Length: 454
Ligand code: FAD
Image 1 (cartoon, rainbow, N blue to C red):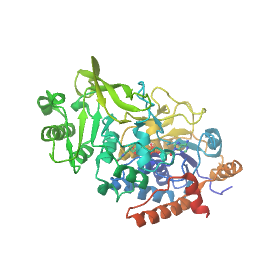
Image 2 (image 1 turned 180 degrees about the vertical axis):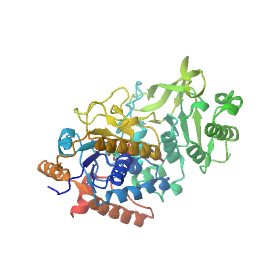
Image 3 (image 1 turned 120 degrees about the vertical axis):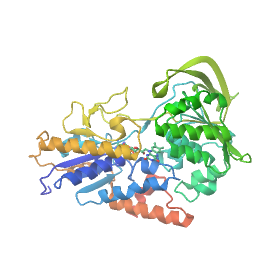
Image 4 (image 1 turned 90 degrees about the vertical axis):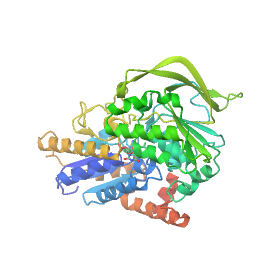
């Protein structure tokens, strides 16, 4: 057993929430040791597998996470699926406290007929595909249709729209996978409609993402003037960020953009998906039926009510971007199925002393990395308060990673340490350099494991 008698904390999930929680714990307690367990052999969660390839500046947080992982009191253990390879109870035995930071790996379904047809994808899978998530490497979306419909109007929807329409020249110097780049180079998609239940004043995207759509080369905006009725009058009462967003949207709707552009995109407001329409053979999606809505109430809280009218849109690709969802990973952990989060008070998991949570699994799958950072710092502070208030029994020595690593070994789990990830990283950068990109991601878990054992 290590001689350290300080608190040992275990973190489940090596995404932003995990690393920011670790960072704050290490900083606030000079005697704490923190171990991060991550399901994949590679760290960083959605920074690697979510954030769009053409947003490299967002990925700079990886530098901070790397510093944390390399901290002398921190260790990273990749390729450990908590809940399967090791249980939460086993972790709780080995550590003074366990923090769940495992994000939102599930997907909200639309709950409409036909949503499982070929041609329909969740944004989560589609994003995972172009970002090299091992479980999505076989996705092979058929991009031979002219129109794609995206359901949902948040930033993820706009990321997907942009990737579908961006000139391949723009993407080829990013870390998008070669597979995706090849498929996009042959894509016939020329028109992307981004559908939302409510109106322009309720749209969930931010101005940066909208501006990127407006500025997309060879694409013009194509919106329906009727969707913007009454919007100009409402502008003056809007808070400033929403006002600027709405003004930009109205300008795009009015001006459209380059007439010679070969591609177009547009929001379609006041519409809810009702059914995916199958082709004559019933084998794949060829369109989507939308219910037309009207708004009840106004502002952020306005509700969409159906009018009874319907509209069919022909399209060969449908991407549902209505949200990610956390899933339970171990029956020993409380889970609120309705809110799809681990029920907690300020990061303290309900009814379970010594168990905490941070990030998307704590507050639901919304918010940028900075939001996740703040809520992870909050959880770390609460944990430290509990230590200082004597709520965690620090008088007993806990074995930490030593015990868990031994356990994992007996179960045949090959863990990946941070230094081993660095070998994978170097290999990815090497392959990327050859292609003129920052990295070419490895897509296969076995291949990742092979890199550092060879
Ligand atoms: P995650 O990032 O999902 O990390 C959770 C980690 O836990 C993952 O590594 C996962 O593999 C691991 N895990 C899951 N289950 C287990 C298990 N059983 N055992 C062990 N480990 C497990 N924010 C921005 O600021 N800018 C952007 O441009 C941006 N773009 C985004 C694009 C997309 C498509 C998405 C979905 C999100 C984007 N975000 C962006 C938001 C940002 O990614 C999130 O705020 C942040 O990643 C949430 O952090 P997290 O650690 O809670 O979850």
